[in-house]
Amino acid sequence: MKEITSRYAEALYSLKKDENSLESSQKEIKELIKVLKENPDFLVVLNSSYKEFEEKEQIIDKVFIGVDEEIKTLIKIVVKNHRGQYLTEIFENYNSLVNEYRGVIEGLVYSTEPLSESQLAKLNSAIGKIETRPVELKNIIDPSLIGGVKVVINDHIYDGSIKRHINDMKIALLKYGGI
Image (cartoon, rainbow, N blue to C red):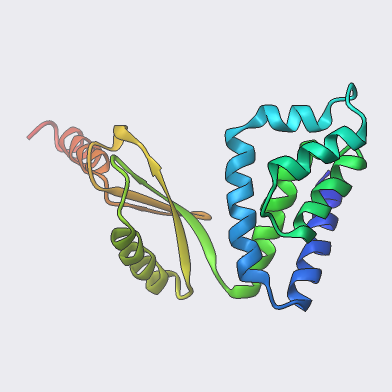
């Protein structure tokens, strides 16, 4: 299905690139990804064989009020073609295409408490310097870290968590016979 989801994403990307609206549509797509992940039952409704497309279309119009018309049209086309279960993947592919175009890499920052916008901006800047390109981090709460943060970008892990420091001390103690 990767090929199918890529085609839909590339079609929207091409359209939005021609309109010079990649960044604004990316913000909207990120919000839609979040909404779809938080409401998986919504995709079940859109994929239901018990509802006619016209009814699904009305649901889409009611739920996605204020969403860009071209994005809404894409949703309708995907649902009409019985591929609604792939909407999240299509939007994630679109997001990746826009990031590639913008030269941005996305990653995750794990912390024990939500980070402020200021803290995220500082981390984005610091990690961006290391990665030598702009970075956009999404904050994930992980109480097991005890404190500090852990950043994951592709195959790079920057771990400044207290949990990691405790593990490092444990390994050192075991290596030197508990001295």
